[in-house]
Length: 457
Image (cartoon, rainbow, N blue to C red):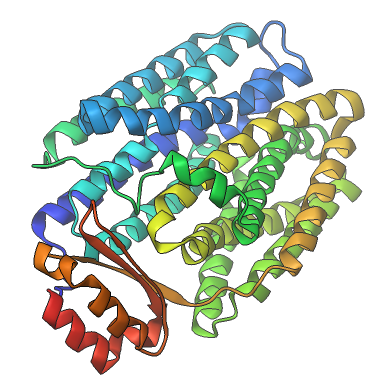
């Protein structure tokens, strides 16, 4: 049977590469809660340009992540990751030195252009066995989520002692640490190959774009990040203007809000999984996102209303950020999971760009209320779409690497697999020599499945 334990090399790869993603995430997001306050003091700043400078990195992430992944298949993973981290550090340097909003936009564009997330996951796939890859990606996902919360707290906290522009220089330091980790702690794979379960296949995009359930999820992550980015154009300004919290004091709001969101998210995710009631919790999280925006919109001058709104906002965002990639993985065809997640990431980054650019413009035209109302309308649209989504099936995906002799008798093996109760999808990619199986969770322990797995190992 397949071993359930990670090897030493797999542990080094997973935790090392997760730390690189974490360092980059913290460096990118720790300035976000204070960004609009900082950018408003730069030469040439306007609400529209502030919003553009906040969201522009999302556009460049969406543009460059897939090309970087393709380049890494030909030039090697580590050189491309190194290049991306250097570009990110250069963008951070320009952002930290910027005295005008135009230079900040250039710096933020370069920060986004260092889009190596997909390449890091590809390297992780190179260094892990097929049967351990789901575990590896789960660890990476948890690390990213945790790093985001740390970043949102760390930036405001550090500004008690450091000026805001120093956070960009700290991001350079984090990028340097990531480079050291890349070459000291991460093993070099013996073989680097394209992985269907982690990397996108461009020819699959038209089909996946027309899949209704995946389209709903892609639109959902687009709306979530558009709402998040637009909201954080005005939340820091609201706290300073109406509640008297300066740029150095706003951590006092974010700390309890993030802690509450973390506890609530863990509880709700656990309950949703145990009771297999993911859809009600998912729809409920969107509803609470709407309630949060209503609190922020209705009474921006009232501190308690703002505090409740921010707590609800972080809680619902954390839940939705955890639910969505899980739903994509469960919904996508087993042989096109990498492509589905690639489209999902593009939608996420485009949402950041649109939320920043449109949110800044709305703030300039209609002040705080215009941005919050825009977020409410977007979230209501998403609620309607999510309400009619199909409840997700609780499936698992297994990959079997087959020997040539086993591939020759694949039709017989597939016929036996399809007779096992709970088997949903069976596919062999001949050029990879890998069989992809999607099934109900209980099918993994079915005697016929275990017997067949022993015969083909």
